[in-house]
Image (cartoon, rainbow, N blue to C red):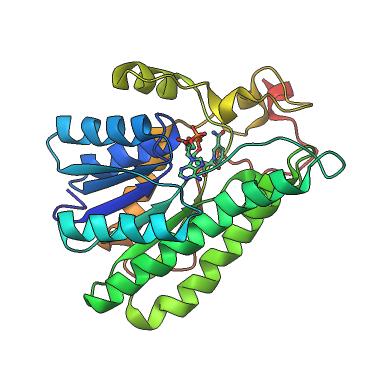
Length: 274
Ligand SMILES: NC(=O)c1ccc[n+]([C@@H]2O[C@H](COP(=O)([O-])OP(=O)(O)OC[C@H]3O[C@@H](n4cnc5c(N)ncnc54)[C@H](O)[C@@H]3O)[C@@H](O)[C@H]2O)c1
């Protein structure tokens, strides 16, 4: 197993992508600290990890609140000593464009996506340095952080910021042998999230909290060169690789797990060729 003896902290552990990543890291031997503003999501994610035979704790925490973040870091330290892997995934979907987005909603959305990652990165990095731990961090981006998407101004802007936050932090922490990378998911197949929600016994309103994007085809997988959407477990495998010693010289890198979405030439419609 790639992550035996490691402790991973994951934020935003809904039964969808971050739940899949948490389970993917646990499948490679990691113990887990599951963090979410929704206590049920944190608890059930931790339970699924302990059911799989690893150790796990859950922490209800608003990632934008410094006092809650430092308390969560202290709680993780008390339970496990030091965290080896941090995965920043907490997110708030709010599909509004520049003409409609109210200032307070813009601030809240960019706060969750950027300040949340900033706070956990800062305080976990300090712990890793204090303990001489050569850990690593992974930020969860989106293809919407690489491309302009109408009606998603806060999300696309914050995800683009998170992409370069990753590179900037990688430079800050390189001298401490702490690696910092990102994973870019894209529109994600909902079946696994729905199955996980059922297994965990929680309500989950669907991908992007059920928000359908203007101009999207009924089956977004048809727009992808690989003709199908990724599932959370695909991201979990990518996260386990980046977090492991197999990636020991990789830092400041974005690993796209997007079925070819970003690489695609814009005018080619893969669905029309089949
Ligand atoms: N679902 C997609 O199609 C998709 C595509 C590309 C990238 N992503 C990214 O993948 C990651 C996971 O997405 P998902 O679809 O599983 O999202 P989700 O909405 O199912 O889960 C997000 C979680 O973040 C939590 N959260 C929100 N605000 C918080 C706060 N202030 N503090 C702590 N937790 C908070 C929510 O309670 C929720 O559990 C996100 O970073 C998202 O941007 C998702």
